[in-house]
Amino acid sequence: MVTLRLQYTKEKYMIFLGHLELMKLFERVFRFNKLPLKFSEGFNPIPKMTFASPLSVGYSSKYEVMEVQLKEEVPIAFILNLAFPEGIKIIQAGYVESKKSLMASLTHSEYLIKVEFKQSIGQLPFAEWIQSFLEAGTIEFEKKAKNGKMRTLNVLEYIRSLHFVYSDDEELILRTIVQTGSQGSLNPETMIRVFMDFFKLPQEIERIQVEKIALYYEENDTLKTLFELKE
Image 1 (cartoon, rainbow, N blue to C red):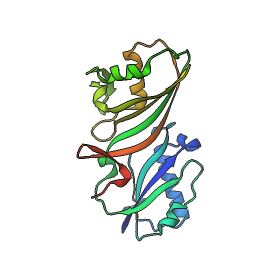
Image 2: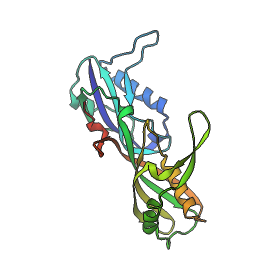
Image 3: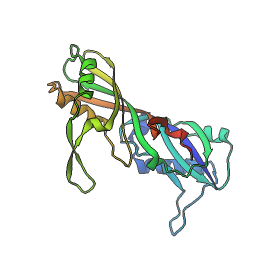
Image 4: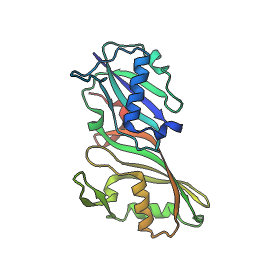
């Protein structure tokens, strides 16, 4: 048995697939191409696949990671040429011996966030505001816990970095690395709304578009891309 790790994109119309639909899609493509899948045991055997983190419906991504167990190796060139619907493309593939779980190892996600406003923001000093925001010490927001109760948390404890990229009359683009995974996660849209509330901006948001551009694990206080995860 071998473990095949894939880095892939999820863009265009594929952003509207839920996580379970995405898993079914991968299974169909693997079966159609007769990959020697390793199945779970029991009355309803399923392919042994794991995904680093479910992507929110409506978000695009240039960097998703999954693993599938095979009975034997298949040439990487064949894997890289597997045909998926437009929007999903395999970028990297390789066999790994790491026993570490992708989901347990994941610590951070990096996003590009485009915010479209209903009113003009052309004169607002976002680059300066971001610095003030990050230096505020404590900025509280409420998040629902798994037990359904609301918890008050400090949003800054979840933000690794936040940078101004671009703005025009009604559009703002930011780049951020936020905590993701079993130790707690910050939704990028939540971060934007906390930012807006902190500066009491009267402008209404028309739309928020989120694109994931990297997944990371942390090793010796350094972030490394998740595809590189080793023993």
